[in-house]
Image (spheres, one colour):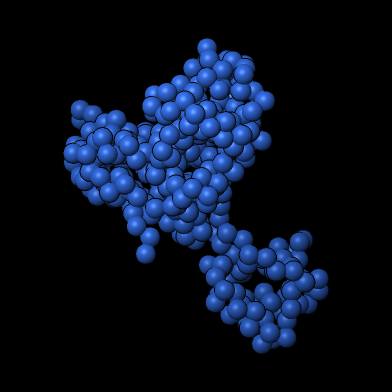
Amino acid sequence: MTSSAIEVSGLRKAFGDKVVLDGIDLDVPAGTVFSLLGPNGAGKTTTVNVLTTLMKADGGTVRVAGHDVATQTKAVRAAIGVTGQFAAVDELLTGQENLQLMADLKRLGSGEGRRVVTELLERFDLVESAQKSVSTYSGGMRRKLDLAMTLVGRPPRIIFLDEPTTGLDPRSRRTMWEIVRELVVADGVTILLTTQYLDEADQLADRIAVLHQGRLVAEGTPNDLKRQVPGSHVRLRFTDVAELDAAARILTDATRDDEAMVLRVPSDGGTRSLRALLDRLDEYSLSAEELSVHTPDLDDVFLALTGQPTEVVAK
């Protein structure tokens, strides 16, 4: 059984009269990617700040890497790495000097420090730019360097990534995705990710929690969340009008598109319902030229759960 890297029960936080977190429960298994989604002001960053000991909760219990964040702050900080939305790198130094600075702060020996810096430069594809000032780096290079700096010394068991690809071009975003996957697969790291990109959560997260107005409104795998939203259907395309007519008569809940010769049949997208649909067609000796299963994407999920379009999802 997979142990829990992060356990949150009844987390509450208010700023004056404004309740930001209203009883949040989370359980993040070790060695997984967990994503927090929510509109602006939902409480994502406040949650991360509490989990990383940067802010004290008003109520509830939080354990990170088995340690209580309120009473075992040093142990929590020793087990985690944090990469904020804006890269925390020194622009006056080179990429190599930034990494060496972290090695010195972690009190690594000179030989070990040089080895670690060299390995990280290679791992994050920063060798060619190692001697260049960070002020000349692109946004993607800065994000890679920032993440590399969290890995200097003893690798953290849990990494918090707060919108790690905001402002990056598509190629740089995909590079960061590959790095995140590698951290989980190769190093067994647990990652808690906040993001404003739903496709990012869909690509990376094992589980997603949706926050809205300080409450957890949904949690599950990306596919679990998609199944909660009406709109899943099986698309059947016919080449013969007679077969289209016959199928429409027996599938009375289907929506018909005469121009495309298509029937859209409501379905949960599961194998059992799909098998029942095919058996129904076979019973009447009918067959479709094409069959495809369509499910709502995370944009549909987010809109249905929060009533807000994805464009407002932010830190």
